[in-house]
Image (cartoon, rainbow, N blue to C red; front, side, top):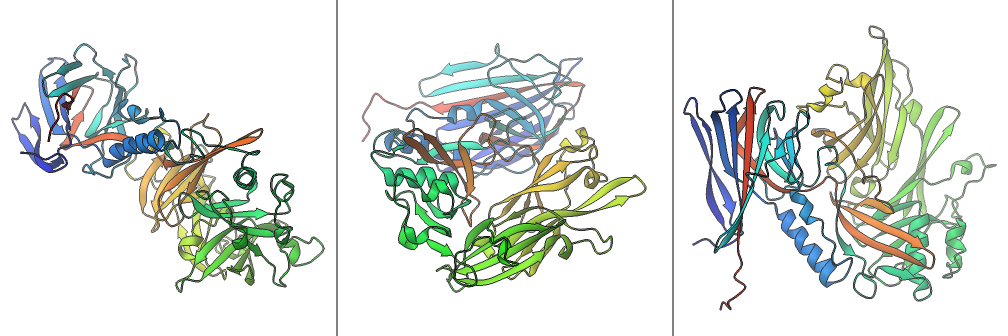
Length: 562
């Protein structure tokens, strides 16, 4: 007798009907009342005879079940959002065929590998797309028995579509052009006083309204250390902050750069007694003084807390400025009380230049997102030289990390890598010219993943890549690292020290502000994954049929069971 949730043994196979060769594999699956049975068949386009078939069962990741529960429990029961909100249904809108050779994993979140083919679950298609197949509505069947409901989806792929090696089959939310956009998950925080009410009114709760609306809207830098807690960097010289009519801004903090701790799960949001004034080396307010030779560069771009090995909390921040054509970074370190411990200036253009070519380093972005983890500031940019043979510029893209004293800890050549991604070939880019076709432009990171954006140049095209901390390629091509157009008033944040991302919804309107925190995935999620025993290669000589049957156990609602 199987117990739901417990593992059972499933047999998968590939069969060559011409040679008679059969390849089998045993998989361990969890019985959860839902089975996905997959049959892929190749046919000779001329004779119509079946020449190969592959059979296996799928895996539905925990992400799907957890997302359903969160949508129901947090939004529906706790009322921290629209109780009718649910995007889970769309996780089974598209079926994907890819060359991913990774086995199914219960923690999977997204489509992997090159997309060889795809089809929509409901919309038929008869065009010339070289990847897209169609749902076969005639053969797609639904059957109800005494104990199960069976849904057998049938997809057809003509000779011109989905040619290549197919090893993984996914169900997912969006078509290939949109699969890399952010996915907004359930609201995990936002209820104010009643179901689906996350409006904060200025007349009934002015302190909370002011903190949520004004502080988050006019902050210079925001860091979350948990889904509800973190730090805001603010310049209290900003009129909208210090002259708010809704609450008296503490006089002692006015006219200062301040680090403000927040906890949005508390009604007051901010504990002003723990706010920290960031002072200059003389113990005064840190402000730019244009007539002073040193303090005229006393601005702040970003600040992040850093917990040292001994547990002491410090704040590390920086300011980027330029003198003539050179760009500098001024790095500050403060105690947890805001006393300045050190200040150092580095000429990035010259310090990190290419000494062989005597060309300056062109910085594109400086980030404080790694400070919380190891106290280091991330700098990305490039040096370049001209290849006289091709009369083109070659870019050496670099990821530099420096500690709070300005010492260089890392200088990594982050050469864009193609890996086994077929996308680049369609764009006229290969391993021999990719450094002539792009340069590093933007940088995002979490604890273990680095998201790099390369801008196009000299006939290339824009693209994202994902690498790990050691520079190893995790994803050669990622279409986007952002929300889809039309998703307004949402801001994404990494929870410091983790690979988790959350979304902050912030929408002010007249006398109220709407505010909530939602879970966030950096790609559209998958509903299921199945891996074939071995790849099946489809060519223009073949048509292909894919049958995907779901068997769902019916629940006995009519009897009491003890």
